Image (cartoon, rainbow, N blue to C red; front, side, top):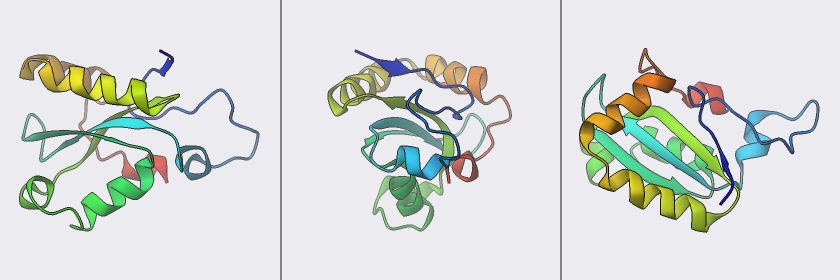
Length: 120
């Protein structure tokens, strides 16, 4: 399994060419992400093959249910080389204790800021 480690949610694959924008890199790259309603608030863990599109859908209330109800924003993400490893990581994170998830976000994004602008 090859994982590109999260660093405050801002990272790019080593395949990035000079002059390539973040959205061009992440358009069809598997990712695991955490959304939060506020610092230490409600958490949502998801997986997608298109991070920018999926987060846009969450932000614009296109996703019914949990994320629409709690008004969450992107606080952490991790890019993967393939969907299998992303899905495996998502399942593992969902099994983690809440404190471990909070620490993961704190370690990479101590201000719990919305990282959406960083990925577009």
